[in-house]
Length: 188
Image 1 (tube, rainbow, N blue to C red):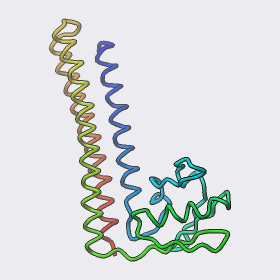
Image 2 (cartoon, helix red, strand yellow):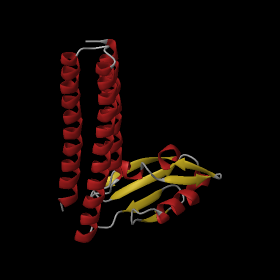
Image 3 (cartoon, rainbow, N blue to C red):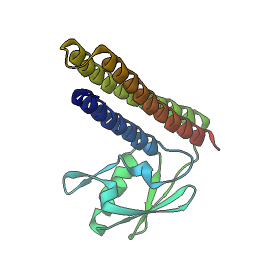
């Protein structure tokens, strides 16, 4: 296999892998009926005027299925963390005892579950579009190499088949992540 094709396929696989990773992170941040630290992954706190990820400012302890204890490393950030939690879309009401913030997640309503499933589908579709965009770019590189005569048509079509297999593999992974998230959301 020519170096041009090998590089295009390697780069394509790496970028597709990143798209899947982003989908995994996005799905983890969608709330389910169970409390978990991943729910706070996309939450920023205004810490001394700088938006800082909550996960850099505190430790998380899941006490039971619906309760999370957030312990700030810097107690002076407690009010800022509490404020960020209140304005987030988690629907949680934080309670502050001076040392830690306890969050009891409300039960998800059927309507809210459907909204989260719709959001998960949107995130999944965005990831699949991203994977297909990477495929298109790699295919353009292969087509150009065939057109310029750097590689033969047989080698080009073999590379395209390999590219299609890579694309299918990554789209299937996104579908599996989505299916898992949907089943989590539907579990009561």
